[in-house]
Image (cartoon, rainbow, N blue to C red; front, side, top):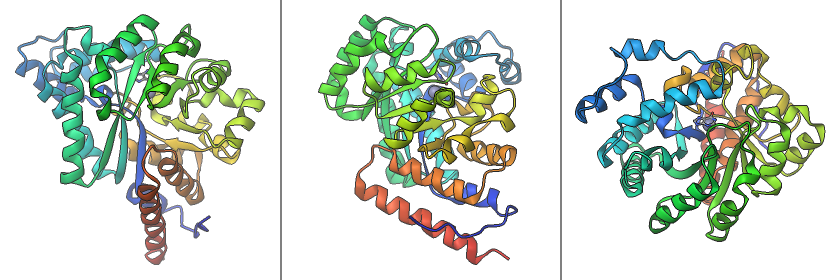
Length: 350
Ligand code: HPA
Ligand code: ZN
């Protein structure tokens, strides 16, 4: 393992921004900025229940996950045409490139759109075209993960999988999101088993608001490879040991956790505890348009609030590449670039 050189705390924010990284937990509908919501509403001849961009943004005061989801699904209702999905993903990928994201695995919620009569191919083709263009125009690698909405039925998830079947070459995996408490992973055992047979990668949100038991069943029943959020794992020592031993990555989203009141203050976040216990935690933005920042804001704010160090920074970025579903060849190239960024930072330190 690379020995992380000493880096002054004054230089740490700059290093956090400059270091190459992967983003593994970003809901593309959660990257829809109020300005783009208004522009798409106008383009599509829709009226919004908010008078202005400012009025919409000022409604972003959440008390828990559900209070956010209600407004997040409403915002996504302006997406109708393939170009809308393309424009949304292009805006995110341009922003991610500025934050030195080399690779993004992007969640999307097809049922939010198919329920409004938007065909699934409109969604997937628009997002996929933006990912392909990001590679050539930005040098960013981007892939798609289809998420099932867990507040809907198993039958609806199966129906969505069937609709997606002709387009499976455009996605790398499936996930599980939306209202967690009351919708345990077991509800989707059979559909995840089918996705596994199809050769898709598997992830699930678990232990964001829900109990450690949901993390256990995401692992043992759904057989997921990563846990999205997972911060409630700290309440179960045996689970912590399992996650550390098996190097199961947690895609942690600090600003999301603060805005949805999972932790009362960012300074109370347990990211350092997870890393120091040997877990493969990563830092991600979740829904950056709603939670006050893209990935670099998540890094700089949680580091400032909790006093994490350059060693933690290296570990988080390294984990993000290691836990991705990219090829081993790509991972080695990115990890080499990460090392170089740290060495460059030391050369310039005084
Ligand atoms: N949790 C669950 N569902 C979601 C989230 C989240 O943080 N963001 C978008 N859908
Ligand atoms: Zn999420």
